[in-house]
Length: 611
Image (cartoon, rainbow, N blue to C red; front, top):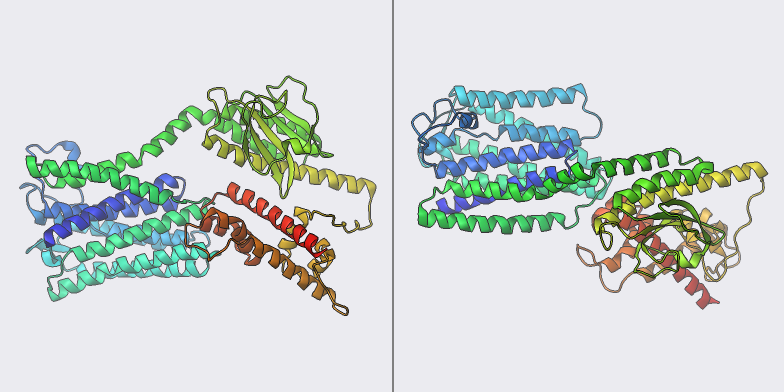
């Protein structure tokens, strides 16, 4: 039973370590922390594989190929000269030291500030110790001398004279890693980052217990099952992999959503099918048991790299369009303040955008005097009349069926509104794609990212135009306070939310003119600001869905209330809110805009009821 349990636990830990390493690297391929974390996880995976090889020694090959000899470099020289069938030979090979030193390097990279000479010195010392331990294991008997007993227990290896010094070095660098992570967690700017760092602290503590347990077992010659160390390292591997994946996504400004769970389930199902097939071969055809571990690694490796391979081929075939699109957006951002050349700049960005998604034509229309005017066009030769604002006004991207818009836009396929804050500045209209019936969801997501940048440029150009007009007129008087009509502008509500705790500002806000803001005689302007604050809270509470807040994943109907509450009441950073809701930046901005409009409408209805 102990043998079976040990084999199963090591096999599961091996599969999880290999999968997590590939997942982290493939999702954050440009992050040095992700690559180092993958290297650390794969190094620990080698330890699990080493235990499986010791418990199930493979048969000796009749001929040792030249290319196979480098794979046995970590094991003592001459260990396999008499064959591979000895379990003791396998146990003397793989070490956990490289993984500890790589993890120490990661914790220094996570620390705030740059890698100064002192930090690089510590990293260098750690790697030197790891290399010295490997060389000592291979060419000398200073770390472990011989093997004896049952490989299921830790006392199988006999410690050498340098073993206490070796364990002391592991303890020191594990402790330094803990110190780095604790300091990073205390200095973390967001709660989400702090949670991931605290999870890394717990994982380091759990993994660090493996060293003292092994040392005590060797010193007291106590028969402690080897599977205990595997359980500790296996738990630490999963915690480290999940925490690094979330942390890397947070640093890069993205969210992993349910991708982690879905990817894990898919890989688990595929690996299980492979393992069942191989286990059948082991049971009925005498295939070596170690083949189960090799097939598990290959199954996880090949199927985890499918998405990576697809992205590589996308880069090969679509790199030109992507480079042109990025170059066009960079040029547009560079000339953002040149209001006099806005239409020319928009045209230079629209062309690569349309070519990237293979649109038959593209239009950018800007709002002026409650009508849409053509500002930029791609492959468009027809006369376009001025369109009323309500014809193309939209809160979100719209897929247009044929004939939805009046001629000459009857063949338009996609409408993307361009928002800067709460005001719709314009609209991006695309014709049918050249090679498909409709645009793929991935293309729409890229269009939304590009449209946000275009909208920002339009806003900056509009601000520049207004500033120049003000300078020309030399207007010194302050503008009069706007008079609220039946509908409260969303921009007014947004400005009040941004200054929600500034009672002096709220007292001068147009919202202070609302009848529902009841202020008695003798009250100061601060009292009036407090009433505006309370009125906004009443309206915000109407956005809250009924019932208690459910556990994660939070349902979509809670997004508007939570975004406004977290962003303006609790002053949480946008990244932290996106990580909590598992949404992208584009979805966050659109949901926030819709929520502010709903809040403005609620205030308007409350005012109408008060009247």
